[in-house]
Length: 447
Image (cartoon, rainbow, N blue to C red; front, side):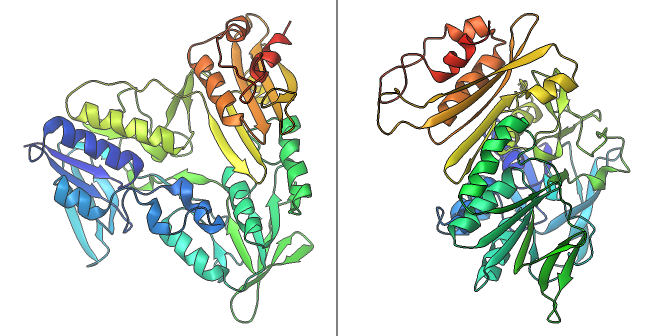
């Protein structure tokens, strides 16, 4: 019986484990999963919405319990097992069982590394103070929720997806929110003209935003609790600080192996999720993803990619063949009254890659323009000037953004041109759309 070892008990790891169970059949594979935390298979992307109140309890984010994996599927699902190193020559995984503080060694025939990523906490004075948080796991969430009581002033460091989602969540809960980002715009994956719409929303909703500012120190009260955040000589009082300054692949335990890592520590894999080392696979936030538009590997750690890569890894580890088809860089988030989405390349990215690119901007409405309750929708299409192939899009509005970005993502996946996109047969009825979809209205302006 083959021995399958999986490092990581969340999206990629457990998607792979379930594929092995289904393809090999119950009892026909020895599957051991090693999770350094205490919770398996939970929705990390849902964490801000527990704070905001749309999700009632942290446990609602758990897709399957550990007992389910153990009792229904026969998986040896271990908790608090932290992997310290991998011996690829002898096909062994070594680590520490945190419960007993004892070392362990497990031998594998096939190994999947699905160890995810860790939040980045900058090495600044005061980050070890009480009241300073990151948000990546359910225990992080529970600690933050406990610390929220009777607090009023929150500082968020980082203006990316998570930072903006947290700003929304805490503003909804009545906090005074200060948002600091060292970049000169929010959501740097958007072009500056589109990100300006998010900046306007922060002004309308009373969120204090400081762009182009870097946090240099956190001040601490005599009690040991954070009391202020410093940006050079400027100082702002605060009750809570949450760092949303990005994540890094959890792969330091592989540094003594021959497994190829990118410059930032993500694992190189092929379309079957294989590493360069025999019988070792990788998937999820610790691995790279092939970007179909860039035609090169990229690091885009999202739950959608982790689940897909995990399924593909598990299928290939089982002996069948399945290939990861790559990503086009699609992402979406809600920010107060707005939804912001993007796919493919921004104009800035296209120019940095040296592509002959241009863009068109269009402001339309989410439904037929003669409805009283229509909402504005802002669209930017990026395309090649030499052959008019679509390169990407950014869409921001109060309604209908999700529908539009998914259509464009599908068009990008199939290498469609502006003309082909304009000719798509999209649904129309006045309560849902104009006779010309606003995305196609934008495409018509490319001439």
